[in-house]
Amino acid sequence: MRFALVDCNNFYCSCERVFNPGLMGVPVVVLSNNDGCVIARSEESKKLGVEMGTPAFKNEEMFKKNGIQVFSSNYALYGDMSARVMGTMRTMVEQMEVYSIDEAFLALDASQGIAFARELRSRVRQWTGIPVSVGIGPTKTLAKLANRYAKKNPSLNGVFDLTTVEPDEILAKIECQDIWGVGRRTSAKLARSKILTALDLKNADMALIRNALGVVGERIARELNGISCMELEELPASKKAIASARSFGHRVESLVELEEALATYIARVGEKLRTGKLLASRISVFLETNHFRPELPQYHPGTQATFLRPTNQTPELIGTGLDLLRKIYRPGYQYKKTGVMVTDLVDESSVQMSLFGNEGEKHRIALQKAVDGLNKRLGRNAVSFGSMGLDEAWQMRQERKSRCFTTRWDDLLVVS
Figure (cartoon, rainbow, N blue to C red):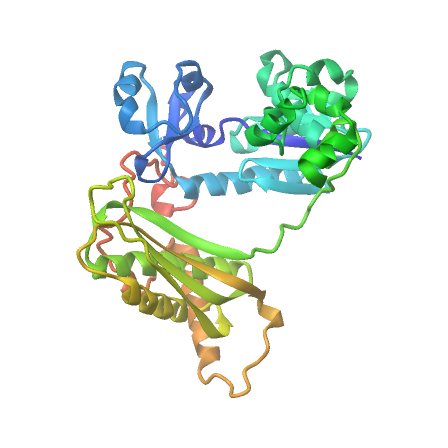
């Protein structure tokens, strides 16, 4: 078996371009929550010197001077487009591992080479509008490097099969820090042993690598030698925790606003639990002031509680979460962020029934199911809980957000 790594090119920027063709060939950047830092750049923006993670406010003049189009992050759009890309690829392969929102590993047989990769790339572009690069290798690590090589060499048109060439010449040009799973800290350790490139790591003594980097490092080195040590994980690993937290669009002082924000975040966590058919045994709540403003009073409390019986019902989650918030809230502080995390997750089917029963539980579950159905049909929070509020003045800044073209009826494109 061989592996292919399919990676969406500049994914967030590409999603914005699908519904705005006028952005083709134009420099584009996407900002993080609250329009803070650059988290995605088109190739044109990279060539202009826009760096990943740079604060947006420091580059406003540069953006204007170079005609760079700036967008707030639109995760509803990006998540749905990701699902469409992954769904398209599933029509062409039997085994697939979704590695991230914009990457997937595919299992290929001997007949699926460059021609297959080009066909896949063409189908994804035709069906979704998203450009992808495809790297093929005998192991997942080499497939990842092949993908990187395809991106770095435009003449390859986004496809490269490392199994068709002698890989050493290519590996000699790749620094250790650019190898999947290595990174800067590990590469610094390797440099002390004069292991600077992927080829050096491939040819290194395995005992030395194991001693310096442990089993994970040895596994990477063996993968560079064409020995597959990492299988395709078709089923996603079970979640151990689910969290939701956002920075506010302005500093918040009142308990009422904090409650509305936290209730909204908890409702989202409840949706994720029910979608994954999971129940939470424990809930944690935290508050944060702005540590970037040391001249202001600082306060960063957190607390948690355990449910008598694991749950995924939003009213119970919100009730407990707000009780925790009231315990840690202190007036006189300007809060920047609040959040919730549920842990000790268990499968719905594996929960022990209560000895004393739970009167009305079936009705509450039916009601929650009806609310979820309406929100799925009409849009998120079409039906919401009163504790979530209506004003949402605390919402994070998203002044440049595009429409949710694929997930909200009111945002569909209109052809006249």
